[in-house]
Amino acid sequence: MSDLTRMTAVEIAAKVADGEVSAEEVTRAHLDRIAAVDGQVHAFLHVDADGAVEAARKVDARRARGESLGPLAGVPVAVKDVMATRGVPTTAGSKILEGWRPPYDATVVERLRDAGTVILGKTNMDEFAMGSSTEYSAYGPTNNPWDLGRIPGGSGGGSAAAIAAFEAPLAIGTDTGGSIRQPGAVTGTVGSKPTYGGTSRYGLIAFSSSLDTPGPCARTVLDAALLHEVMAGHDWRDSTSIPQPVPPVVEAARLGLTGDLTGMRLGLVTQFDGEGAEPGVMAAFRDALAALTKLGAEIVDVSCPHFEYALPAYYLIAPSEASSNLARFDGVRYGLRVGDDGTRSLEEVMSLTREAGFGPEVKRRIMLGTYALSSGYYDAYYGQAQKVRTLITQDFNAAFEQVDVLVAPTTPFVAFPFGSRTSDPYQMYLADLFTIPTNLYGGPGISVPCGLSEGLPVGFQIMAPTMADDRMYRVAAALESAVGTLTPPSLEG
Image (cartoon, rainbow, N blue to C red):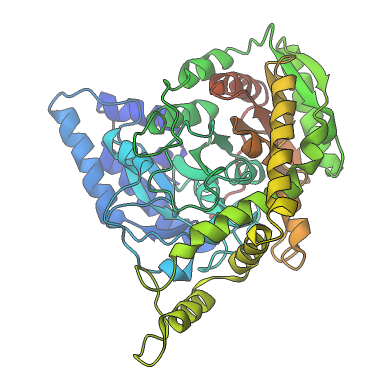
């Protein structure tokens, strides 16, 4: 494996800026790594080798002209296939969008280009981001680099696996109910969900509009913070975008790396302290808590009584919004079209197209959402779920009056074998048990590796108040300084 693929984003950017290595060399090293191992991992759905080399050469030309480069210039990045990327196939992991090439960039992608990062390609995902294992991709599952027979988390398993397999130092994910943090936890990488509205949803293929949040994936907390800073900020094209400055996440991460948490109060959510979690996960989590107390943090028990209702509330709200958002895939405007032979009505073509184009999990959630929104059931289901969402928000607000951040395991279990939960949707949904409350509240959350259980990574989750993303980065970096990062077994053997 090339040393260039083992470097952090910070190290790569510094070497490119100093002229020690060219951006093109870095890019070709990662493209070679993808060619060597992605047949085993299947992290990518599309590799844009020509576009990546062209972008890298532009960075090298800028450096040669003496122009100042940004903190991530020349650093390769992988993008979850739910973000519109101009001229590059963007499918959301679905057959219904197979071959679609957007004529525009999502705001996040646009900002990556402006920052001089090099976009390697699009990563695999559960179809329309609906899943917790990347087993629901229409193009086949992604394998976890720690154990190729196990899931890499979902829905953004491709982005997390690409980082863990050293195919990219950085990646973009989206988090609707834990789809950045949960893959980060089970692949031993860092996954960060910013405050809702802190990163633009413009150009994001919508699943659940009140929950979807683009965010960074990386191998270190500082790398994640740098990517967060590049991609975040107000966007007038997104009506939910927050018109405030990006929190000082990079400064906070650097502060955390000093290993000093004196005066920080960490709230241990009692509802998540062990119930439903594997013993090995809880052991690694408690060891991480002990490490944080040695750094000066104070652990405070905090009760959030309505968190136990988060899972059912989420699985009413998210499918309801999905049933509305996915109505646009009708076989008329773009994407797949089936049965349009001149003999069928528009309704028949739409029905045939959606039957052929959508996978089983997407169909399940569309039906759940349509039922919850139907006449006579709206108040009983969707309306009640929104009331629970308000109670969960009140729990968070009350907790943050007592502590600076909340902590919990990221997932109740480590990566599970393929096929072990697909026959029982409820067991699959439990993968997001500890992450969903943050999405319903709208605040930021981050998962950072904290150890191993049975040889597989365990994630430690830190949640902060809205627009206080810097707090979670400080704690996450401090934990990383205490326990280190994780490296999966070699794929070359």
